[in-house]
Image (cartoon, rainbow, N blue to C red; front, side, top):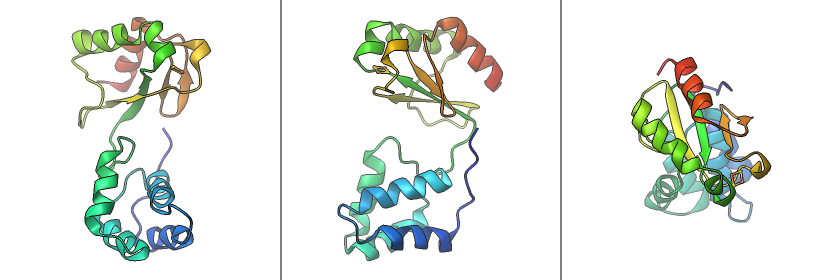
Length: 156
Ligand code: FES
């Protein structure tokens, strides 16, 4: 798993300052915070709003609209499952059904469990559909058996 830094107001402030004059600065700022800390702390909302001269509600709205932005540190391992066209054609929905039926796991549900499952749309690995990422590492030709092994390894 890629370790993220603990939340740091000063570093967050620097990341905001370095990007605040860019065109469409909000998304690069949010991505930088998420990339660095693994989530966007509530404490960042006011300084972002101030730096960009927008409302705190606008910042909060964007954070909650996009799946990839987290408002709290993530726990456990992250399994990103592709549900775009090629992976659909190769059975990703059957795999998602399998996760639900065999392990009681549902993509994109808030969980404190050892394995967090997130939906993504195309990982650029269509030739190896159904495709996924586990903590950022690609997995191709995903099967129910591979999923079972990942769930077991995560201790879910
Ligand atoms: S459609 Fe799944 S990796 Fe491209």
